[in-house]
Length: 262
Image (cartoon, rainbow, N blue to C red; front, side, top):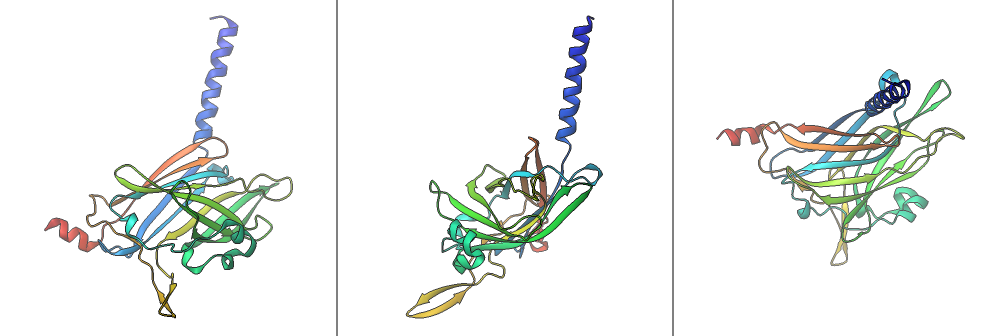
């Protein structure tokens, strides 16, 4: 084989090896479930993920997360987000800039950024709000409230979209680039936990001139649990161009298993 052709083959092999290494540079673990998990009950979806890299290195920053929700959860029957949160007011005033009835959930996040030989980390709170309709689609706003040195306040926009079986809907979230310390790389969100549902949420409305407080209705736990549990999945995109799809299941409630056996 000619030297030039040998060199070309070696270069191709090297490129494929580097691509395979890049594709395996991030490892993602997904968790999800219902609270409560009684079949047919109004519930709160809890979900989260952890991103890591070999050797304890800071993983490539996220650019998007697409969370797939189990079928049969009754997305159209919930009463979450009866008010609208405006992004400009959210940036300006934080959670106080949004009506209480626009809140959809809450959680926490952990971000990291390499700075010389050190890894600087920071925890932040997460609040989810109902945003304005876009092309007749429900939007969500994940407000990540952090402090220096890693990052300040951020808004991650998301859309609630239809999905194909075995899923009923998906939350498609865009993660914009997050600048870090001066001249440093973008921030990597390595842990994220949030809820979507009425747990710990209190709304209010006026009835005959009186303010009445109430808990909104969440989505419903599917009436029948599939063998192996309720399926969840998530697609993760990273700034380095890699993608990963991760699956997990939420266990069936004991009552649901008993009904299936009957």
